[in-house]
Image 1 (cartoon, rainbow, N blue to C red):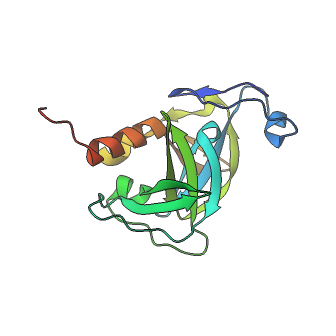
Image 2 (image 1 turned 180 degrees about the horizontal axis):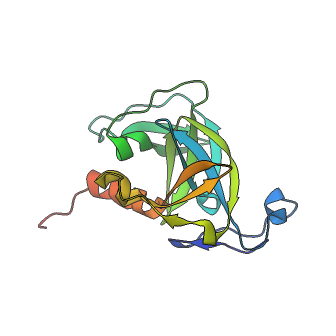
Length: 178
């Protein structure tokens, strides 16, 4: 996959050529994921969807926003909504700490920040090592966690970013008349 746009569950990742990038050296056929901690568990999103990872700046609260929207941040002149992914998956907000980060992601032309407890690494995973998510996950988790993999004896839940964003849109602006 070196230098080509990768694909995963949601289709084209929007990635591209990254000259002199360590991602160019990853094993052929693997998919790179950004791995992060959330509520004592480990999750990941495809790196091709990640624009950047930032320390948590001052988050401005937004009146009337759903509980899982922490607020907005100013990212070099652009206003970016920050989603509390723990609240989406577990219905309980994340506790901010010095290790907390915001992963800026883009999906379907929408850019948002995902507040996580900490980013731990980038992991290269072969598609053949992806397994279906556990059936023991609750409904909120099953909607967003679409696969799992074991990397270095650690179980990682793979989030489908499109499903996370879709779930956020449905809650933010429910369809009328349905």
